Length: 359
Image (cartoon, rainbow, N blue to C red; front, side):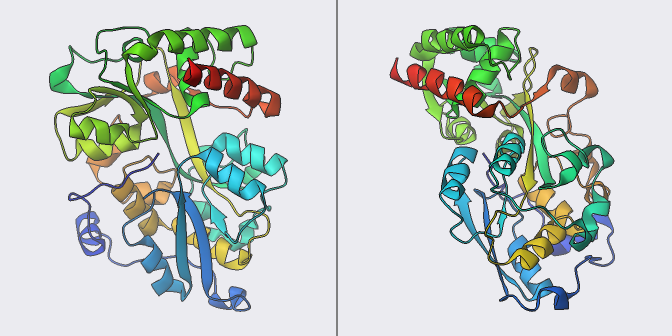
């Protein structure tokens, strides 16, 4: 889901110079609070979904070595932790998976007293339906899903799911994501329904729409639609906004739009899985990611919307005013957050996606 940006990214030194920051200002927990643990924290994260120097900066600031493994999607994260925690201290699940994992006893409650940088979070993110009172998670990044496209190869702005779900206009040059619930959910939005529907008849309509469209779809991509755009292998793709923004920095013939029918708005959070071997260090790491300067460096590098108000104050106008990062209120009004549908609801989508793949 997440891909790092390349040549345009700012170095730590240049970032401080261009934003006018005069000191690091990192708010950390006293080191003595986690002195009983070995100086290590193990992180399980999306691919390249962190700042260029974040892990090293954290180590330099705290003396704790941060190691990171990568997962491809929430299903992989959930499956690995469901079998028992193999040693991770901090994980980055998406909103519905926070609720799903908390309900299954897979997350430990956070000690907010050990995370003073909670004060940097925008108030709107401090109490959310999927995690009331932020008992088990704190916000990391948020964004939308939409249409990435090569400007010179399409007519106008393909700002509708129609061009991916219900048309032969760009046949053979379309790529959709490989996550069944996400793909079916956007199909439901195109059909005028909720992406959280658990009505079998409505899910069936989205399934049939995709099966009919398969002949025109080049690939259900494992979150690499941005690379297909960049290489010229696809002209219209379904992707996460930050991923498209990152390749837009490399190729000005690429752009992004949120479909007029609406789309998913998502949030990824930071959580501590049950059985974490270094829970104190985990709290310290989460607190570090919520620091103003550290958060700004991460957001600049990965080009997703930060929920960190203090970090946002350090960002450039190009970042803050970019509607592909921070959508307008009108666009957000058309979007919909995913809900945890329960295991029965998840099963409906899994079964429908199996039939789409088999067709």
